[in-house]
Length: 315
Image 1 (tube, helix red, strand yellow):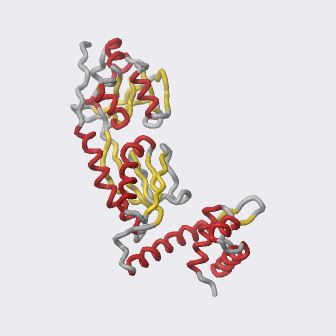
Image 2 (cartoon, helix red, strand yellow):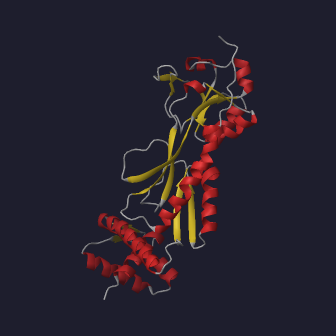
Image 3 (tube, rainbow, N blue to C red):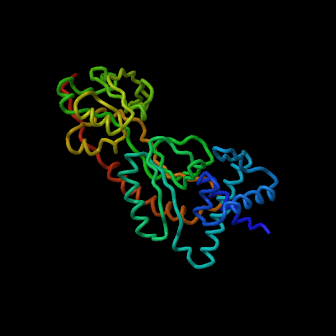
């Protein structure tokens, strides 16, 4: 008789580890048993779930849908068993969280380590990348997104917002003058942070009418990494636009000055997002509840941090 839950678990293990033999070794069960249980599951479902070749395994379209559903079912079963055992206040298992590199290092990593200290039965993977990870392909439980979200099936909880600022070194401003309106940016050499503003236009907001003002820029240097573009700005190579958390340390230290504050566009939202599910796994719900207020409290000082702008003698 087929134990479907066991077979589902083995199938997911095969997909994650990439081979039947790897599952056989990790579970310490014979290789033919692993293969037979997957074959019986395919027979029960009535569809081929895996394509096998001498080089690799791959999920069929039916297999992709089945494995996604099977992961959800096994998580719900595990959660139900924990509830029945009276362990619902102590989540367990692995949680996978992703965040942008710098934001994750500064604001998410301390929360993850605190979460691990609070819940000893949890293991965590923190994936730091400035590219958006794919939830299904990488089995992501929770993601921090800095920026406006496209319409999707993902669920989002807003936990803050972040200013987009233009900053430059005092030395550069002393040499070229400090622009008091966006159209005067042409007086400064420009550093472009491509991940924030991939186009050759910077948008501003008129403080009087609230109109959007687009200013064409000609970058002297384009950089794809926030730390690198901030370092170049500190060296006086040019003025740049970054998110405030990316330059806040340098601004507080006096190495950079924020300019054109009155013309800043609307702040960019920050969300915690997770796949839409009727019932979140308890580990994911526990992390969501744990992280949301902590991220808000860590972002609050940045929202209240209003460094003085450099004052220009230019007309």
